[in-house]
Amino acid sequence: MISLTNVTKRYAAITALDDVSLEVSRGELYGLLGPNGAGKTTLMSLLVGHKHPDAGTITIGGVPMTSRNLDLRGEIGYVPQQIALYDELNAQENLSIFGSYYSLSGSLLRARIDEALEAVQLGDRRKDKVKAYSGGMKRRLNLAAALLHHPKVLLCDEPTVGVDPQSRNAIFDFLESLNAAGMTVVYTTHYMEEVERLCSRIGIIDHGRMIAEGTLNELLRLLPYEETISMRRNDATEANRSAFERFGVIREVNDAFELRPGKNVKMSDVIAAVEDWGIEYADIEWRKPTLEAVFLYKTGRSMRD
Ligand SMILES: Nc1ncnc2c1ncn2[C@@H]1O[C@H](COP(=O)(O)OP(=O)(O)OP(=O)(O)O)[C@@H](O)[C@H]1O
Ligand SMILES: [Mg+2]
Figure 1: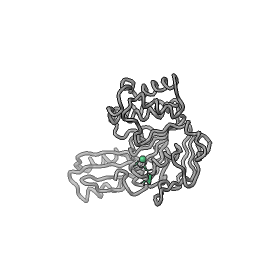
Figure 2: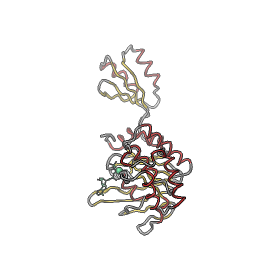
Figure 3: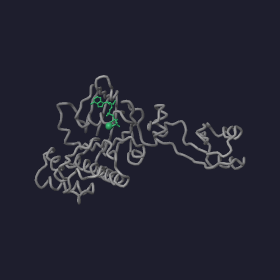
Figure 4: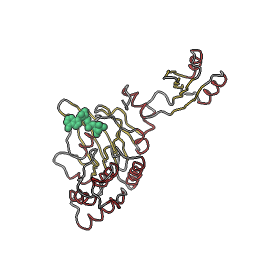
C-alpha cells in the first residue's frame, strides 16, 4: 500500500531521512518508533505530500507520489503532531472546515461529522469552543478531522502526546477498530509500549536511518540474549558473583546483579542454585527483552536519553 524506496530528505545541512526504504502492506497497522529528531514527522510529511524527497521514490497504492500528483491526498488522512484546530470555533465548526478541504458538503458532511465525533467520543461536546477543551480532547478532535473523508490510509504522528491513559486506550481501541475494518495505519511514537501494544510491524528509526524493521518478535530476536535475570543482593560477595557466571554473562547494576543467561539456562535452574548456595537475595526479577534493548543494542544509546 505504501512503499518508500531509498528515500532521502535534507533540510540544508541536516539529512532528516537517509536512504530509507519501507513497505507497508494494505490493512497493516505499522509503527514507526524513534527518538526526538529521528525523522518521523519528516517521513509523514512526505507521505502526505506536504514535502518531497531529494532522492528516492514513494508510491501509495502503486501510484507514484510526485509534486504533480496530488490526487493521492484524498486517499490519506493525516493526524499532525502539532494540533491544528481553530480555537475560537466549536468542534462541529472545526470539522465543517476540515470536511470542506475534502469537498464534503451538505447532508454527507453532516453525517460524517456526527460519525467522527461519535467515534472519538466528543458528541456531547460538539458545541463547545475548542479553546475550552483539554489537551486530550483536542488530540481526539485532531484525529476526527483526519477521518471525515474516509481515507484508505491513516497517518498518525504521535497522536497520544499529553493524553491521559484512559483517553489513550480509547484512541488505541478506535485505531484498532479502524484497522480491523481495513484501514492501513502508520503510527509514529517514541513510546515503545505503544508500538508493542498496537502494531503488527515496527520500524525503528534513528538519525534518519531505518535501523531495524520487522514484527515485535523479529526485532526482539535481533538481540544476542533472550532474557535478563536481575537479583538485588543482600550479601554481595565476589564468590557469589563468580558462582553465577556458570549461567551466563554477569553485569553489576547498582545493588543488583544482572544476568544474561545462556541459551539453555532456565529461570528455575538459577533460583534452585541460589537456594542451594544459601545466598540471600532481596528480590529476583526475570525480564523479557524489550524494544528499548533492541534500540540500545543497535545504536549504543538508550532511546530515553
Ligand atoms: N523544517 C525544517 N527545517 C530544518 N530542519 C528540520 C525541519 N524539520 C525537521 N528538521 C530536522 O530534521 C530532523 C528530523 O526532524 P523530524 O521532525 O522529522 O523528527 P521527529 O522524529 O518527528 O522528532 P520528534 O519526535 O521530536 O517529533 C531533525 O534534526 C530536525 O531538526
Ligand atoms: Mg515529530
